[in-house]
Amino acid sequence: MAIILREATRCDIPAIARVHVKTWQTTYRGILPDEFLKNLSYERRENSWHQVFENASKDKNFTYVAQNRSGEIVGFANGGLERTGNVVYQGELNAIYILKSDQQKGIGRTLYRAVVQRLAQMQIHSMLVWVLEKNPACQFYDIFGGRIIDKKEIEIGGTNLAEIAYGWIYK
Image (cartoon, rainbow, N blue to C red):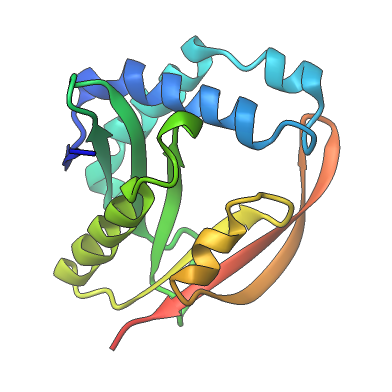
């Protein structure tokens, strides 16, 4: 499958929001309440992404999109500086989502590597990602050699969940 990887622009926000909502609805079914997932809104997610883009230079974050042959955005990844001041893991993979129909095609690997390369350009050689412990994509992080380095409890949609952090240090 031919995928075009490029840095996202503000024009991509509606498509990023669509992928974000759809992937939450498929990935987190059975983990988060159905009513919560049903009520996810493209408009609210777009507003969140406008904030991400608005603060990108201040927050030193970036977003890549993956497009299929017909130009449809089927995945994205957002990365940048680690957000809590962790002294060991200075970079963070804030989000990586690929539509269910486009998973298992190497898109995640391509997006992951793009984030790692961009962090390296910023002289950052370590990274973490926070992910729900029950997320079926945890195996993706295992494949790339991520080590579980932390765990915390969070609340989403009225449900208490465990979130784990995978970490990488690159030489």
